[in-house]
Image (cartoon, rainbow, N blue to C red; front, side, top):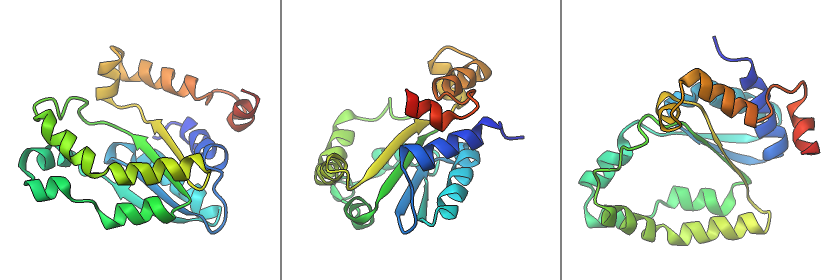
Length: 179
């Protein structure tokens, strides 16, 4: 059974953090570990009248990419990602890691090369965000691996994350506005 605080979190993300409204193009990006919250946010965004693109990462795919990609693949810039950064109104990234150290065995030069290739996208993203043309939010969804990194049990980490999100307040959106 899903934690009831997820509805509050979805409300904060949709109506406070991203201020989703009718006609907005919105991307929700996460992993399968955060499907519970992603579905609730998706529902809230659709109810608000947004056009939503779900981007769900395949666990382990980033490690596979950096291990096996050739130079052309490392230098490739996705035209789809470019279009999202150029035209979408809001992007929500829900961090939900399976393995926080998945890339520890990867040559940092390979990661650097791929990041360098996407520098123009980062520039577009940051420019649009600074002009308030692109609303974005990153949040964390508690996972076992994140809890381990925090040296906590999953339950303790959930309490920490949800407490920091003011999800125990009766009206978290109002609490954030007052913050």
